[in-house]
Image 1: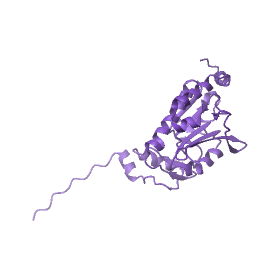
Image 2 (image 1 turned 120 degrees about the vertical axis):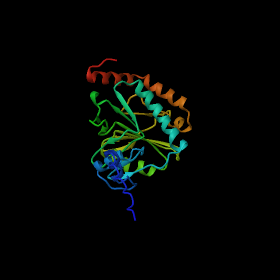
Image 3 (image 1 turned 30 degrees about the horizontal axis):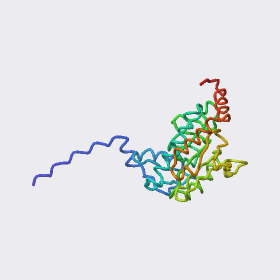
Image 4 (image 1 turned 45 degrees about the vertical axis):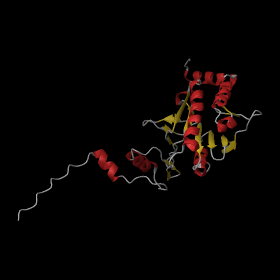
Length: 245
C-alpha cells in the first residue's frame, strides 16, 4: 500500500498574529497590573474600550443611542466649543489616562490645561495622558455604580480637580469639585447653572442638557465665554509660555 502523501509543514504565523493568539483576552473582573492590562488591550485590536480601575478590568456593555451615544455627543460638542475659544486648553474623547500603576481609565471626555502652560497632566512618549486631567466627564447609564463608586475614588485620590457625571437614567447631572482632599458638589448659581471653578467660562445649564436643548446649552456657554473671568484666564494661559493669540 502506498504511503499517504505528507502534509507540507505550515508556515509560522507572523509575529503580530502569534502575539494575538497567545495573549489571553481581557475579561471583566480580571485583576491585572497596568503593564499586563495594556499588553492585552493592544492585542485585542477590535476592542474599543476597556478600563483598569484599582487593578480590576471593567469592560462596557453595548452602547444604546439614547442612554449613551446621544448624551455623549452632546457633551463632546459643549466641551469642544469651550476648547475652541480657550487657547491653552486641550481635550479628548475616550482618551486613555495613565493615573497610576493599577489604574488606567478611559473617560468619556477630558478637559485639561496644556502641560506647556502649567497643566497638571502630561502627554507621555506613547501619546497617552499621564497624570490627572483637570476635568473628567462620564456618561453613566448601566455604569453608574462604577462611575460614582471606584472610578470616583480613583479620580479623587489622583487629583482630578473636577468630575462631571451625567446620570442619564436618573435625569441628573452631578458636578464635583476637589476641595481639601474631598469631592464637594459644585453649587448651582441662582439661575440654576453650573460654573466651573477650574475652567472660567465653562458654564452649563444641566436642565437644558437633560432635555436635549443644545441651543440653550450653547447659549449659556457663550455667556460664560463672553465674561471677564474667561478673558483673564486665557490671558494667563498665554503669559504662562509668553505666547500671543
